[in-house]
Length: 181
Image (cartoon, rainbow, N blue to C red):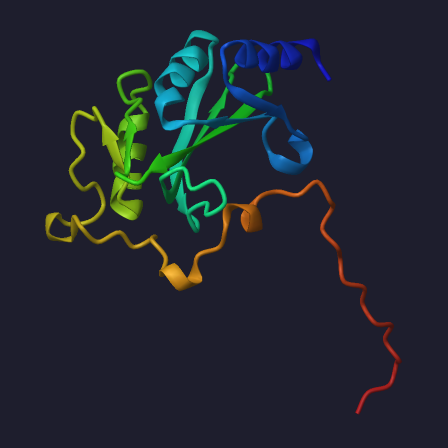
């Protein structure tokens, strides 16, 4: 791997973040960072200082972690950052606490404003400190309707949807017999 990639990973680890290098060709990003909700702003500030731009912010809904019972809501917020000067992408994700609040980064990255409002609409995540967290795509009367939240019985665990290092198994096709009816 390129030395600059190792420097980014090492730098983020030195700053107290859980950073893991990934296979860009298979995953679409070079570095994955797992954050606590209280690390989101510090991480965004660090990424900004290192010259990263924000690609997107979104959410997903999984079954809350029963093993660790950390008081999370089952919601995760995902951030993707990239650089203009070289091909380098990183994904950061943070578990949303049970109060559904996570710090806004819209004052660090102006582009987060729209993405945080959309994530609020679809998942109900409250971006604490956002200057205008009113519904973006949904109407005002639908402010408590979050269409991407799943029914509890249909939720998968984070482990079930997480990336595995194994290559996906491809089903083999049966040979054609050459006969038709």
